[in-house]
Image 1: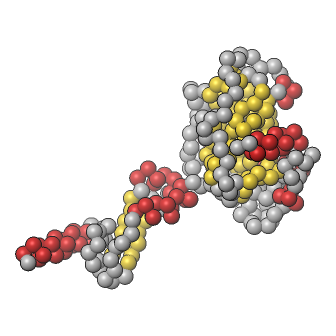
Image 2: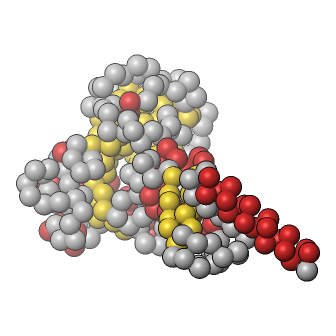
Image 3: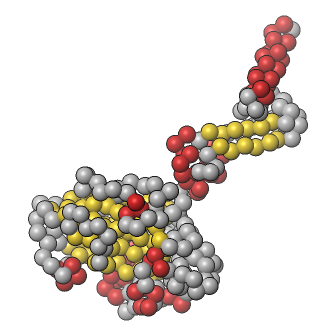
Length: 288
C-alpha cells in the first residue's frame, strides 16, 4: 500500500515538475491531464526548421501509448525536402543556402572524387519532391566560378521520392570541346527547379584520373516509385532553374506541384526528343 501511494506521489511530482517547466513531458503511461508533449529532434532540427520543436496537446485523462519511432517516420518526409547529391561526393547540404547559385552557396571541397578520364560516371541523387526538373552541368578547372557551360544531361523530369541514379553520364571530347588530361579538375553541378521558383543547386568537385576505372557505387539505385521522363526538345533545352517540375517556363501559370502532365510525360525515353542521353538513361535504369 505504501509503495502504491509512493508511486502516485512520484507520478504527481513528475507531473508537477513537468508542468513547472511549461508542460507535461513524455510519460510512462500515467493519466495526464491536458498533456503537452515536446519533441526535440536533435540532428533533424536544421532540416525540420521551423518544426524543430513539436508540441501536442492531448485531452484530459488520456494515456500515452505511442512510440517515438512513429513520430519520427511521420516527420521523415520533411527532412528529405529538396534533393541530395549522393555521388559524386557533394560539397555538402545546407537547405538554407541551396537556392544560391552556384553550388548552393557551398565552398569548394578539398576532397575531390576521382573519375575515369574517358567514358562515363554515375550521378546519384535522393529526391525530396514528388515531381522535379533536373539538369546536370559541368565546369572545367580548379576554380570555375560560375562558368557551368557544359551540359552533360539536358533538363528532364523525375517523378517520385527517394533514390534515383543515372548510372552512365557520358563525357566526350566533342561534348567538352577539349581533350581531358590526367589530373584535370572539374566541378559537376546538379540543378533543379526551385521551391517554388528559381533553382536549387548541389555540386561535387571531381578530378579526372587515367588510373581510375568505372565503378558503380552502392548508392546508385532507383527506388521502386521513381520514374524518369524526357521533356520535349524545347523544354529539355530550358535550364532546370527556369523550369517548373512539369517542364513549363516558370511564371507561365503551371505550378511545379500541379498534378497535370506536360506533353513530354508520355514520351518514351528512347525517342529522338531525348536523344542519345535518353537512350543511355533508359538502358541504365533497366539494368538496375
